[in-house]
Length: 231
Image 1: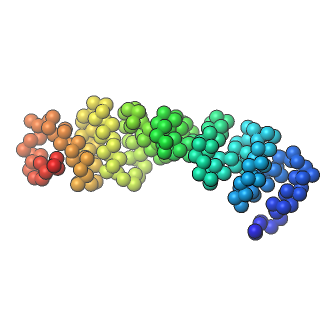
Image 2 (image 1 turned 135 degrees about the vertical axis):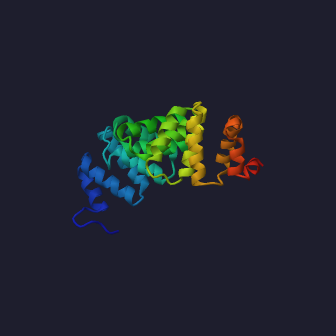
Image 3 (image 1 turned 90 degrees about the horizontal axis):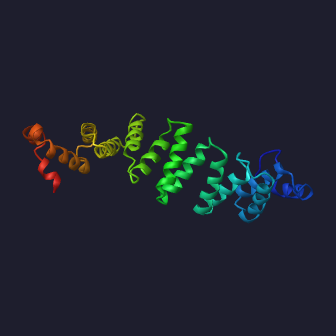
């Protein structure tokens, strides 16, 4: 195949490494080329040799980075997760590693591990939406309502794709915290964004039922079909 001008080919690298079997940089270059061309059997052998020479290298093209990439391309989520955990333990600033770990752990519904990865993302950069989204996704089933409310509120400042859904989730979190006024405010925002949002209508009705003396006639006038939302 085509290669960049001046760079040795895979065959040239193999030949050179035959004479210099422990040259780390040549092995890295060969490993990356083999992964790029999906020659995974040979790439695995090179990655094992790289790992023996320098197990703590976390840079692009290192044994751990190449192993994680191969696992992802071959659909081996468990090997990818284990390898990413090794990288995460060696590099406390590896946002891309933390984000991919959060994604894998969320896919398998390992919420404590997802929460841990989300916290690591936010420790490095508290303005990254992925950190807040993953924290909220994990926090909801773990009933970490304060964290969920905080992260979802932060997402609300970041031009969310689905503002109605986001404000509904904030309302649910505040409701579970007993913050009824804040919950009501956010469910009303959700209904401003999407007036036919059924789950938000039903949540608002529970608030209306509890606050009946404050709203009864005006609520019926404002939404003559309110009764029909429960059916």
